[in-house]
Image (cartoon, rainbow, N blue to C red; front, side, top):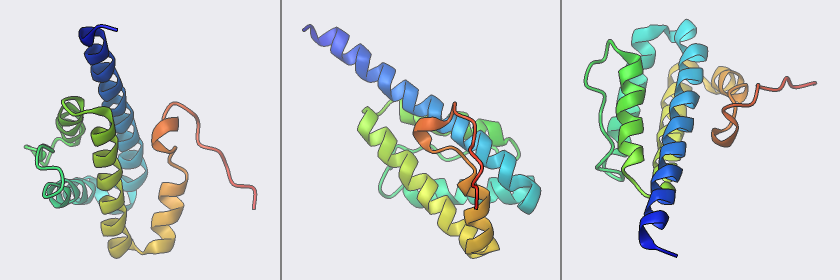
Length: 133
């Protein structure tokens, strides 16, 4: 039970949270950008990061609004430096904030439909399942 291996496991877990978060945001961007445009998506994402910073001051804001993928990398790097639980909480807060902003922008029904087909954070590698209603 050495401390270094415990710390390595913690870093690995935080890295996994960050990688899952990045995949999730890439999927969300692919679903949302066709509706509100790349600039609209980037603006909502950047605003969401800004809004969670009071609770997670270490969360890095996107530097270049025209580079959406750098947004995800910047936030993921911030997540990697946190304990896994804190990283997961920050990702959840960012997703909730983004969803609320998007809901105000395009409405609840469309937001729900677009984000419902995105895999949950823990299932980013799983294909989205169709609803049979």
